[in-house]
Image (cartoon, rainbow, N blue to C red; front, top):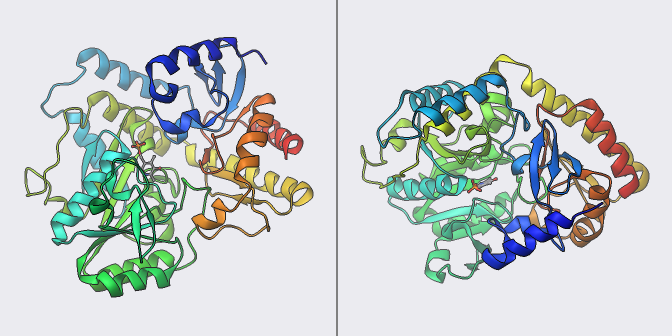
Length: 424
Ligand SMILES: *Cc1c(COP(=O)(O)O)cnc(C)c1O
């Protein structure tokens, strides 16, 4: 497979961009990533003309695949050519806000921002402002974007920044606990209960392999936060409008958080984030309340149009049926292959998310430590390249999720399963 153009582009990129990329994980592919020239339904074509079945889908946003339906294209084009933006409100922000409020159980009011990171940063500030407390509980291996409060490692006893540049004094307000570990959450509340502003969790750990919550785990989080006057924040940046359809993962689990953060799918492929929740809490945001939050590009008309038309298309067509059915076919096909060839591995995921975790004991991971303990080097250094050589593009490492889109077909699934058979 020729990659001369990608190599030359990465060479240029290394001279002018740190690590040659604009987001760290893109450089996880060694010795260098391929550069994409364009997308085509469920496929991408790289700078050297190689075509791959694309299960990365922009790392989550592209529910509909690379070819956007006409209505989505039209909304984007119209708002791009007429504006593109104004610094004063537009109708389309209200349209998308109404759509989300109508479909997502926890959301009475919403604020749009420009990335998932901005959404979770604002949600943490809002939870602190609303409760007058400082600490947040997060999950080890949970990802809430590149924000200071959550770039931490440790446990209930001791915490430290996981990135240079984050002060210890900031990290100290965050309490990391293992996913699915009720005792650790109880312990954190026993120690710090009256200073815990919020528990923030992904409904499904989707940035660290894929790890499902145990039955009742989210009910437990709902109860213990209520008991202590803390907020429950679901970070649905990945799961929002992907798991549980238009009701998001919270409707699937039947647990209503106080605040929800969104990103990825809700912008239809354009930069986006949002936070929503109970009106009483959301009203604490400026200008109606004292918690400052603002953004030049927030509610950008092109993004709002892309998001609204994408979600309306999904509501009016069999998008979720399509992606979830293909997801089922992938997972059951993979389960057969794994049973046959690598019984120590596990197939994870739900709806349109999937991943084979290279576990060592055939046990589905319960938390981040279980995923970390998998054969992560084999995944990234050996397996990923074998899949690429068969023209299947999987996410860059063992930890990132993979996604089915409306652009994928049964033929894509079959070819992909064949490739796994050879590579596993
Ligand atoms: C991707 C992601 C984020 C960060 O969103 P960005 O748009 O990359 O800033 C936050 N939380 C979760 C759960 C995510 O998957």
